[in-house]
Every structure is written in C-alpha cells, then in structure tokens.
Image (cartoon, rainbow, N blue to C red; front, side, top):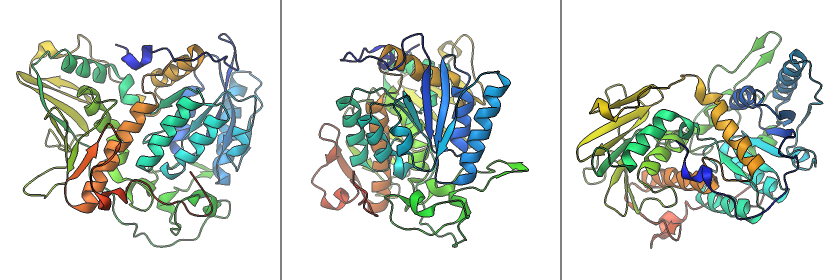
Length: 418
C-alpha cells in the first residue's frame, strides 16, 4: 500500500538540479548516531552520492569523512567528500541537491528554513521541530520555496503499519472507537552534573538558539576513532525539558503519528488534550472532534511502544515487533518485519529519493510531520499545566488560553531569529 500523500503531484513545475537519470548529491547536517544509520541507508540507493557533512563536533566530522571515503573506495568510485563545522557551507553549495538534517531538535527549524530558501530538498529527522510555531513556519517555507520535504517517520513505510491502518480505514473490524498509542513519559528537568566540554566540540554552536545549559556527555555521547568506539546510547538531550520533548515528542513522532493516521487526522489534530491525574484521567488523552480518543496507554504488560486500534467488532495491534489482531482474518497474508529497518530503512529513504526525482510529495510530507510534532508538543503542554488544553486544529492555536500560549514557541537566544 502506498499512502495517498505519496501519490500526490506537487502543484508546481520545478526542474531538478540533476536529471531524472542523473546523480542526486546529498549533504548531511548533524553527524551523530542517527546520521550514521541514515548514511548506511542513503549510500545504498542507486544514483545517490554523499558529498558533504557538517557538525560542530570535530571527531564526528572525522568519522563521517572516514566512513564515506571507505564506502566509495570499496566500490572503486571516486567521490570528493568534504566536511564543515558550519552547516551553512553545505546550504551554500550549488552542486548539492538535498540535505539530511539529523541534528538535535532545537536546530531543526532554522536549518530547514535556510535549506528551503536555498532550494534544497530536505529529509528531516523527527520530530521535525522543537516548538509549535516552528512546525507551522517550516511547513509554510517548504511550500513557498517549492522543495521536497520528507519526515523521518519510518513506520509509515512498514507494511505492517500500512496494513493495520488500511484495516482501520476499511472498518474491517467495525467503526473505530479508541486508540492506544504508547510512547512513554514526558520530559524531566535537566539535572545532570556539569562536565568538561571536549576540546573539539563547539558547545556554543551546539546550543545555537537554545538558552544556555551546561555540558554533560549524556547530551552528546563520546566516540573515538582509534580504537573505534561508537555511541553506546542515544543522546539524552531528547529527554529533558530544556533540551527536548521527552518520550512524548521522541516516540510521539512515531506512535501518535500512526494513531492520527488511523484516525484520518493527518491534516488536523486533537481538539482537547487531558493530562493524567486530572479528575481521574489515568493516561495522557487526546480527544478528537469525532469523539474518539487516543491515549498514551500501553496495550500489553510489556509496555510495548506500539499502537492498538479498537473497533466495534475487534482490534488490531501493531509495533516494530509485529502485528496482531482479534481475528486472524484481519492480519496480512505474510508478515514482513525487519527488526533493524527503522534506523536504516532503505524503503523509506528510497521513497524520498523517488519523490525528489518525480517532484511529488513523499509518504510523510511536511504537513504530516508538522501536525504530528504539534500533537506531541500539546501533550507536554498539558503535562506542564496539569489541566486540559483546548486546541483549534483549523487555526492551529490554543483556544482562549493565555497560559497555554506561552508554550507556542520558545524565545531564541544568542542572536538567532526564526
């Protein structure tokens, strides 16, 4: 199954820098653990060349250049690969067709808008932005500058998730009544001890528009090249209020995304968000205008991060571990799960490259990425206020709630502007 968005022709005519049968040249912005996974995926796609990388951490630039050169040497292919400390040097290169943005979330919006203004197509990691205002502005910039934008929500390219949502939309087990989309808890206050900044890491540049927080290696996992030591954990900036959105945003970008897809709210969103503990509410709850709710609620005793769709006549569950249903007839004929696909999914990445060549929207275009990010952020607003938050999906703004409006955006520091 191909999502409807993947078949939509873009309402413009734009000549691709590389012809339909020519090479698409890509630059990477942010060279951490996820970038290395994406490098493995993009480098395998025919007609793609990785030609540049940027990061404020010197050892990551060295690793990137080493890996790319090793790859092309093994293929006996000559590709000139350059790395930069400042991402704008990639943006400014006329010979680069597309960029992969895999930095911490607080940099996403600035980089994406700069890339749009430079006419670069974009594959951007999820959640696509750090704030609600940023999501709206990035979506507007993509359409204004006629670029292709793909959100790194790989689950949409998994046949199990596609099958589950197709069953929901067909009402194969009756009308949808509720959704469990388990993602985990919200962010914690940043309380890690201060540590010495590595000599080749520009901490001021890493912070960028974000208010100052001191360095701790948990925010930027250490690596070495000789001997080679890769990251042993995901960078933990994502789990703190000051630097990320917690599991609400990190995994919400995956599972709330699938929930909204099943709810047919890809281009809409909830009308109310209720935090756990409010008047007996047990779980973070999203209420939609059709009365259906989506809860941050596990559907098994393992607290599996997945999605369960409940219908009037049955249910279907889907996660990265598999797909299950109340009736075997609801299951796909052949289950197709590759446990390692999510960090180097060639199918999801190929969809982006095909979209670039054909000038069509990819399977997860910018508006869907933006709506999912906003949905996730609203959950954290409800957590912070400890009360329900009313939201207008049409206006993309809070309803009569000055206190909630303070969470619409975060002021930029250090001279940066949106």
